[in-house]
Image (cartoon, rainbow, N blue to C red; front, side):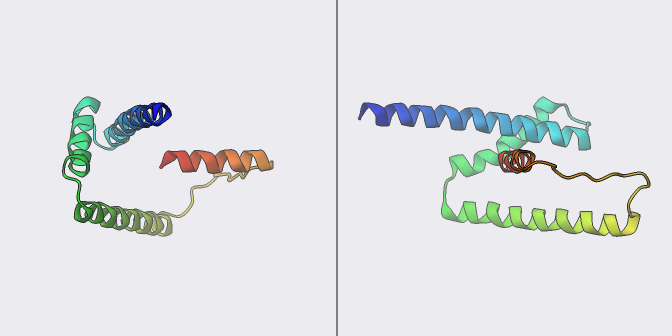
Length: 115
């Protein structure tokens, strides 16, 4: 029972810090797109949007957020595809991939931890 409580406390603290870091990262990213508001205000806005899934937990609410996530991911993918077709590739761009297996897994780990 003692270790269960320790594990529960660890998970709660880990999730709290992880969610704060994610909110700050979202606010920082959107600040580069629209700097009319400061980063703290953007953090409050994202916090208010994300709080709906915490304070009003229901299966229906999670379905809405999942659907919106799919729509926005699809929109972003199509936007980038169309922009790439219309504008093409700039001259002098060099693409490089990992030259060692360790670098491949380092990149894959970074991508996984981004989400």
